[in-house]
Image (tube, rainbow over all chains, first blue to last red):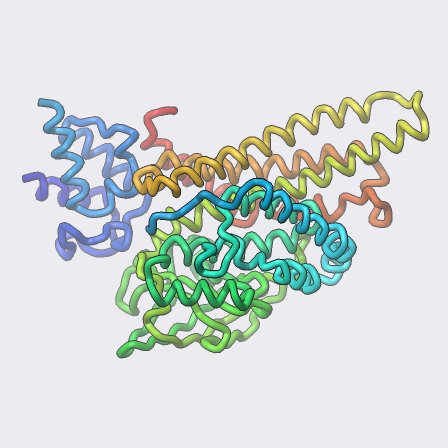
Length: 82
Length: 396
């Protein structure tokens, strides 16, 4: 249910070399050109848009590795809020 | 990432190994270090002596014919070698970084298991070609690409720096996965001497680390697709190459710094013997620099131990975390800054005897090597990277 929003955020802040609409949910975002600087923008916007705070333990390459992994973290944090 | 045994070898056996390495240091490395430096030549006699001891297989597991040291122990070897010849220590460290990449990401793959066996049995020397002309030092981008046809590939790369490129037996090289892949979609490929030709483009006449012979080449290669490490290079870099490089470089820089402080200590002692009533300034300076050396040593050993633990626990979340990247970057920035500080202070203690090239207290090579540390992967680049990563760090 978060896929569309995550893709929107990646489109705006991901600065990917491969267009977002050509990526699968499982595609490797680093191979698609995601840099650490772009990750900052993606992370800040995710926190803002979904009203979550990503803890240090989840702030790693794995979290931002694919659209699916981002969705997984958002879901996990949204669920733990309720 | 494979689950890695980081038990290492027992302390008594390791102590014995260290003593043998120190013997090579005293008998082969130190006597040749000045000549290697002056002529910017490959330290052949030193590398031959290390191979004789089987050290090219130091980090290769014992069941594959290696010594089975853990990463902290390999760091201690680099630290020891650094006390005798910076160039030899750097070549040794760079070799071990490549071994770590192949071991961490190929241990369950038959091709790479066989390969590691051959490295240990034949004491093959592994070099690395990561940077590329036109990229500007960013390891995570490539212009060149592997072109696969059937189960073979061809690859051409313009590499401005390949340390000991013409002396190496094998070459670990990065490139894009395919000609239509984006610049960041990279693979790590293991080439053997018979798989590639090197066309020299640039010489290596530098201030320090002159014996690493880090010349530029155009690499023209072909091979079988099973020589491509299955893990994407992004992961090889973050889990293995980045931490191993900064820990092992930090270790050998620590060795160079240690040797300079040892020389300063010997100088102060000689001075006191000659003139017991001499002013105590040099002794005070020695006390100061000694505490800085301890700071550097604890940082190197601490980071090595932490990495060793993450590996032994197979803690990929920990290895992937931005906070670990920041820590490893901090280690590099700190060590490459402290080495200059420590050698400079040692030079002040030894005075003109350290400034001269013809005394036993000469620190010229140490100081010139020291300045290379902040430039090989430029500290400004690393600092910028940390500035970014710290936006995603909640605090220690």
